[in-house]
Image 1 (cartoon, rainbow, N blue to C red):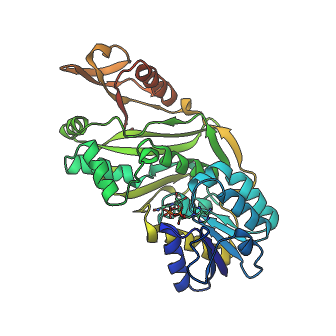
Image 2: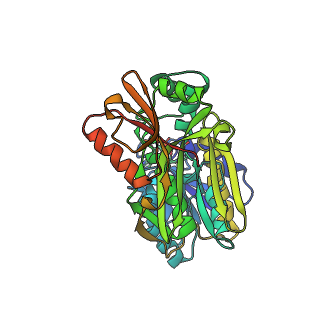
Length: 381
Ligand SMILES: NC(=O)c1ccc[n+]([C@@H]2O[C@H](COP(=O)([O-])OP(=O)(O)OC[C@H]3O[C@@H](n4cnc5c(N)ncnc54)[C@H](OP(=O)(O)O)[C@@H]3O)[C@@H](O)[C@H]2O)c1
């Protein structure tokens, strides 16, 4: 299959190198910005690619929603398969792109957008053909896992853990999307779309790791607990839930053994039971490997990851409840329904009665809106 690649950055370079070595794939051209076409295979106009009858598939690895959406739409409309690693694009425009691809009978695949090398969406898309997925989730952001692991095992504080993650290229100069949980949320949106034919677009509960301190982590360690940022999605009472929050786990839990910047994706099928996949969630070659796997899938006739019937829905996170560990000011010791609590100088640390995820996130938001500093994490079930 003859392929053009849109974007020649971290992932794009890796994809081009891998295509050159892959059986059944051939690189035709690469779209770069005007002024950057320093080799004959580099082109600067998307029209050159869309109008080239030789090109059978495009790989979009530019990032962002526009012009990626316009470029991928044009390629699909011209009857070319499309593969992307761009979660922002699929979260924003996935259903439209899938419908266009299905109309044209071409593939639209996006494994690399969720979990890097980990074949999470690839396996989910296969699993839904024969099984019912009860729930899914895991650790889908390597940057925050690296930071939490560095705080836990190396005793770093938050700022130092972030600096090291940036120095190693795991965190961007602006790390907001990672540390706020937004990156992980986008990935769970895509996984829900694949597993349930529903793309959650509103009603999310999102808590990242920005509030955790070295003292919190030391306190968890003294209790034999490990903190991880987990995503969860699933169906309960015919309602779709999808949320991201820190979770405190026993040191023996599988998630606690996921170290450094690794990802762990999980799903539970009615028939398969728990399936767990661990691997590199980002980086040039891990991500490129997922892109090239999608291209091979297209060569072998796989067309669909998200069904064309996929509809946008509001997530309902009131259908899941958790007990929450909370650290806040001692003056707020009665602000939440604690089942147990201890006062530690000016701080109160406690564990709440079970609360709906929406309820807990709203309660903490109300406290923070009043200027209070609060850290919270769900307790492992
Ligand atoms: N890096 C990872 O580990 C990883 C993992 C999973 C998924 N992804 C996703 O993969 C996508 C690409 O990520 P990346 O890390 O490779 O980003 P990157 O290093 O910034 O590469 C993007 C490339 O696309 C080029 N580009 C952007 N807009 C363009 C346009 N209109 N025309 C031509 N070229 C254009 C950029 O050029 P300029 O530099 O001139 O702007 C840059 O060379 C993103 O959606 C990202 O979320 C990345």
